[in-house]
Image 1: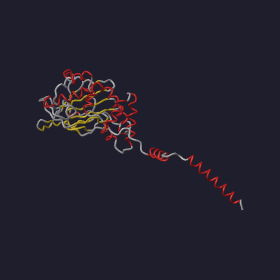
Image 2: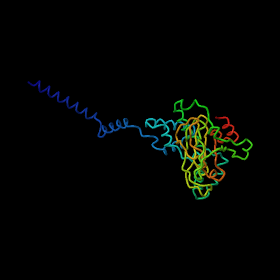
Image 3: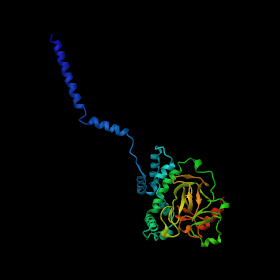
Image 4: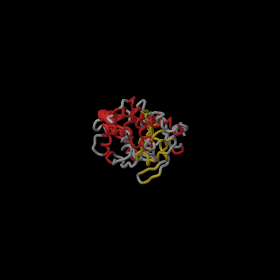
Length: 324
């Protein structure tokens, strides 16, 4: 009759030992909730490295020139999941037009433009702001070109090749200056004249201006408001002197094509272009073009980023003359 009592006592002792072991092995207060938090954090989406344009600009500015491409690739990878087009992504982060005007200004011309920022009117304020960009513009250029180059290679090959370079206007709608007259011309640009324009008050409307190359629109500005003097400039355009216009970066060439004095613009920043695509119509916006007898032309510049210089007027004339 004592055996059941012994068995019960033994079972009780074993149970107490197991209970003591489980208490000793149990996690302390808060450990379970900490483990849960870790699991939730692992499952939560990663915080965006580039939530806005300022964060990308800051990351590019802080990156060494040879690592800017890695920053660009990381940004584009992050944005790929958003479902937005490449054009929309680029347009949301590209610097303003005056950045690209500064970028495509060679060192000799930078000194000239910096001197224009002395007055406090709209004209002087524009060039004072631009002059502030010059000390960093070469480094900034390399970093932003890294983004544009990376974006360009994400387009399908059919969007980046296959067509020949074009003239900015068809031959019947343009008049090139003679080689001899170029000695009196801008030495880092060329003016291509319109034989026929329509007039709307002080405004001229010329023929369609087309992209000469494949590339990405980095600046496209309209709403230029001004007259023929510095004091008459109010706002808008690529710059007070350039007027309405478009700047296209060609990643394959490493060149920026600038088209100035347009009447209107039909492209947007971030847009990928093929040779021959319309950019807008010629015009006479910009201070110099608005002067009496100075309109009826497209001001064309091509800036080579590798050399840091613009093509001279003789190279530009030969380039345009050779293209249909």
